[in-house]
Image 1 (cartoon, rainbow, N blue to C red):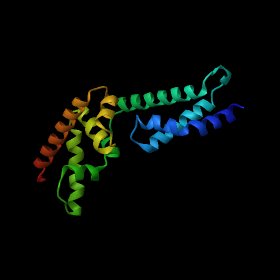
Image 2 (tube, helix red, strand yellow):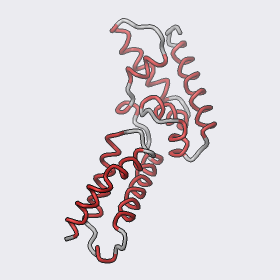
Image 3 (tube, rainbow, N blue to C red):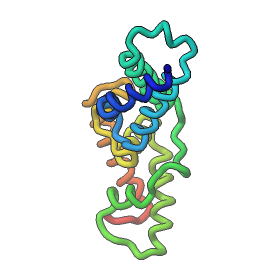
Image 4 (cartoon, rainbow, N blue to C red):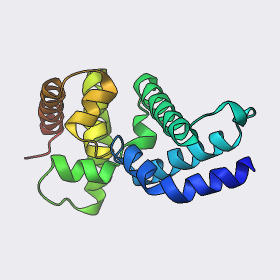
Length: 171
């Protein structure tokens, strides 16, 4: 009975749940994952008779999953080697095309340029350039203001460009 009720709730509220989660996240795959996890957790509730409003409970579960996601993201250290989309960052920071053998060198230098940034600047530039997050999303994730996000991003880009200039890359 509980499983059929969840199936009915899924059919009726799937779109609104996805919109709710998508309003907080830019990654559409993560939106789907969080929505699915919310339904699974609702389905696993042991004492379902105590839930007066399963739809509201579903959205509460989704909100809690979003909070868990942001908390984990806020406390996780950025792994530059694994997560930096090197080619995209290289394209953003360097205007001209480089010969293929120079790209590897640029990517290594770019990783190093980001690695020497203060942690907050690393987080902001990667969240914005790599993850495609908006200033507001970054501010919410890091617990700061949109203005501070802009300042950190500008400083990070300026420092990365200066570092790359020192390495012999022209702007």
